[in-house]
Amino acid sequence: MGMSVTISAATERDAEQIFRLQYLCFQSEAARYGNYRIDPLVQSLESVREEVAADCVFVARLGDEIVGSVRGRLTEDGAAAIGTLCVHPRLQGHGIGARLLGAAEAALTEQRGATVFRLHSGHRSDAGLRLYRRAGYQAVGRSKGADGVEMIVLEKKAGAYAATA
Image (cartoon, rainbow, N blue to C red; front, side, top):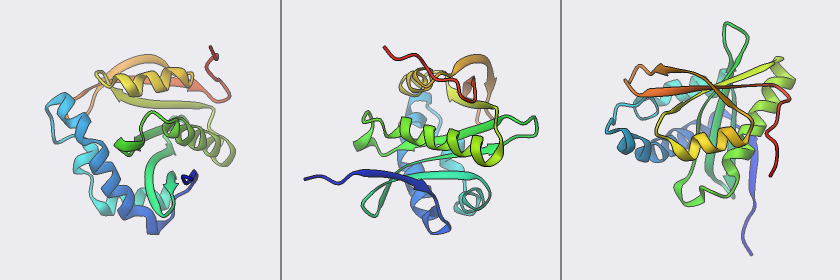
């Protein structure tokens, strides 16, 4: 019998596992864009620790192993920025990313009063874009990351959910 994946708030002790998972997960994104200087690959462990301490960070655990994570924080304009959503490659496609996204949205709404969620996804990141659209996000613009990657900006209002098929 297999173990269940659980979603919980991250603790400071989780920062190193999150850091290592992020590095693993974003290798395919780097290859997709031919750019191994994308933000998740060059972020420092200390910066991850700071985000875990200050932001809404959730992890997916399979036993003691962290197999997914997501971060969210309020921005200066009052929107909730969600980012660095990742799931271990061997577990992708099983709904873990959607569960992490939902946990971050709920916490940002309940604990920080978010009314709008915003995220950025690489323009070639088809699986991520499908996930976000299924979760009710709509493209509202484009931007270029500091790493040079063209990003699609997506938003949704708190409490808005995608229609189910």
